[in-house]
Length: 116
Image (cartoon, rainbow, N blue to C red; front, side, top):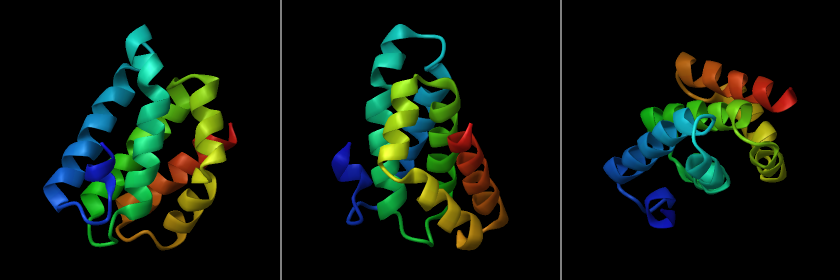
């Protein structure tokens, strides 16, 4: 996963990873196996979000939605990891100047989820 999250990765690879993390985030609260993978998904999503070029809005948007879902529906460990990785600050920065309106709104939603 790390290679797909890097800044060197091609857009389709980053988008595929963001989509996979988003899909996993929807299963976290219903599956024990998915719950065990939530920390890895938070870590990969964070790396993806941090390395994603500003022009890659779809990838940023999907990563933000996935991370917000993981923080809200995942374990306390997922939320703690997201906090340790500084995602609240990243979300705030993207909320202020994150590109499209939907990306800024998703960043605001992640920041709100982190504060709960």
